[in-house]
Length: 416
Image 1 (cartoon, rainbow, N blue to C red):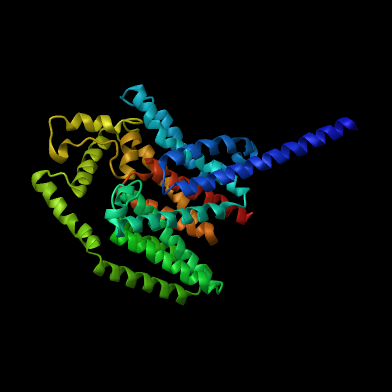
Image 2 (image 1 turned 135 degrees about the horizontal axis):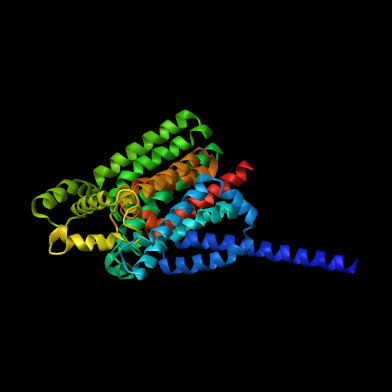
């Protein structure tokens, strides 16, 4: 009898320790979400701590069940393909192993899904991200309004940390998040947050238009907004959504008319392309066209399995020798997600990437906070992937992995 009591006591103590570790793992993901808009170094530390904390809490049977879902096993399949791609890449092994690191984050998707399938703290992750973005918005606005006094605290007036593309991406997601908060509050007759959410969303959009203008984000704003509203159609009266869509379109038109920075950035595209075509001048648009043309050429040389993991930079170095201007540029980033996969892994990599996107798009039918998060993060990522390789970037890639992983886990918990 005493032995049985000791075993029961040991099990109870073990369960208590495991529950504490689960809370720590959840808290670390909340911290990761808060660090995303700010610091790469802090984000790296928190990610390492999260991995150490979450691994003992994951039961093999639960992870196995999660891996039956296409949304979970397809990211892992891309990582495994990158692992195999080390074998036929024609670069030094040091470069191959360094080139594998951008794919490691994909293996975290099923872990996050499993973690938040069993956790009630998923909503806290998105709240932490929104609060962190609000703090960055205040800092960005202050350095933009008072550049001589506060400009030294940031990289540029209005750009406190990271870069223009990263900041505008975070602010777009935050703006759409507060649009969801506003509409959801209106449905619940919470007029305080209905007004507050709308004002915060407007503040983020104004910053994007006047301070951290990015052409990719300008394209994303109306599309992400429409996808978000369409995903909420089942929960709201149709006339409320129509009014919201009209309001978004009117606000976009007003900001377009009032923001010269926005107009200049968009209208400069044609000039940049002409300068590239006529004189091989290095411009933002011209560089992308050059990267796309050469990447397409690399794909035709190895259309099925590609050139292997981390091969992109070496390929560009070979064709850029003895060239100048835009033609002489060397990069490891083709600035297009499909081309980035095709150069390294050919048609196999592209099919896996498209299959993963299709599986994550299938989550758009989820309702509530999880559905709104998936609609915003997935749509922004998909549009950004036309002009960047965000899935393989550190900050943008983890933003996608954490957002989709946590939201998918919340959706599965709600369904269960």
